[in-house]
Image 1 (cartoon, rainbow, N blue to C red):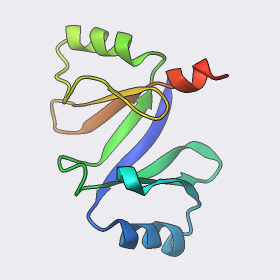
Image 2 (tube, one colour):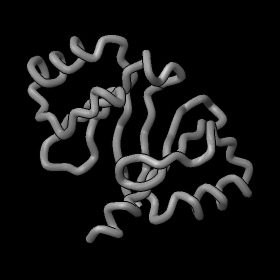
Image 3 (spheres, rainbow, N blue to C red):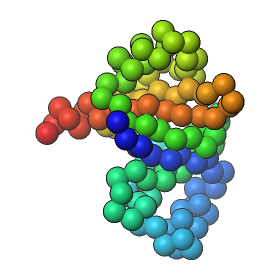
Length: 120
């Protein structure tokens, strides 16, 4: 449906936050430091840059997440086409998410906003 977020691994969340917030001047979107993530807005767009703490997410790679209507159905559709996912879908703050890599090692994720939609 849309781009969702751009996720980048970092090994020092304090230093990374200072760089993105104070050096680059990006506005904080959310701070889930306790869960290993901090997000920064890019202008007025909904997609954000999310920094992932590698001490909590050891297998992190730069990745692009895409919004889909329903992760479970898209997961089943893509899995039937041979996409090798890195895990089963997991519950996140807004709904479900799951990551996979293309045949060239580029990482993508799909996510939905089923929790948010249910609360509208």
